[in-house]
Length: 216
Ligand code: AP5
Ligand code: MG
Image 1 (cartoon, rainbow, N blue to C red):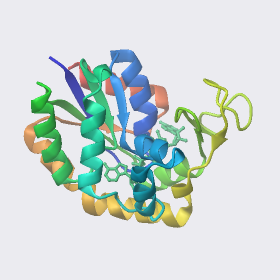
Image 2: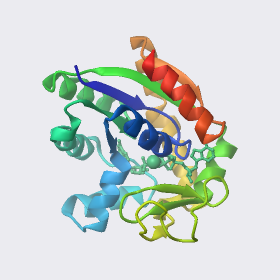
Image 3: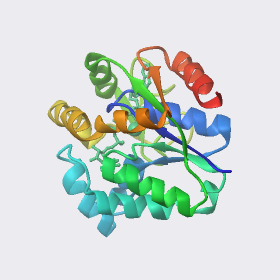
């Protein structure tokens, strides 16, 4: 049966960083809703133009648009064995929709690692982040610097700072997270699938804890 892992946690805690490592280790697809939106914005699709209106303000893209985008992504063949979901679901409506979608694909959410860290740490991580233009690879000027300034180690493409990583927008993203996504912690705790992970550790240690959590 397919394996679906939902990564929960505040902006900047390291969901994308860990999802990439875990997806490779477990040979599963990595589905990042934020990366999918950014891809659409880069390609100037209708979806991208619509999503940008919300993302630039630090708000959530409406549920219906987001759910349709994820449904399409989940239907692709690379998701047959399962996927790491990074940034989706983010509201109870999205979580309910995910249950229904996975049932269609003969799957279910197996485990929900909830990565936490104090706000001061996540803000520091976001402010030093550099993201690769082609494939969303993630670097940090202090904690994970690229070998050459401004160039992705993995695919050689340009590194950029996300539009929504401005301090004012980050403050809104954190507030939106607390208001709209935190209810999912209880939602998944009740299912017995939630596992808390201390995200305030080095990348390698978080990965080890995460591996243990998903393999149990
Ligand atoms: P999204 O792209 O999902 O952003 P986010 O949730 O705010 O999370 P981030 O990507 O900022 O952080 P992360 O946890 O992935 O951390 P990362 O690994 O990069 O969403 C963006 C926007 O899209 C939303 O605001 C919303 O508008 C829209 N959207 C997306 N999904 C949606 C949905 N489902 N519904 C509606 N709207 C949606 O790490 C951060 C930095 O820290 C990096 O520099 C990294 O190198 C560094 N780092 C990582 N781990 C460590 C560590 N352990 N130690 C030191 N440094 C570390
Ligand atoms: Mg991310």
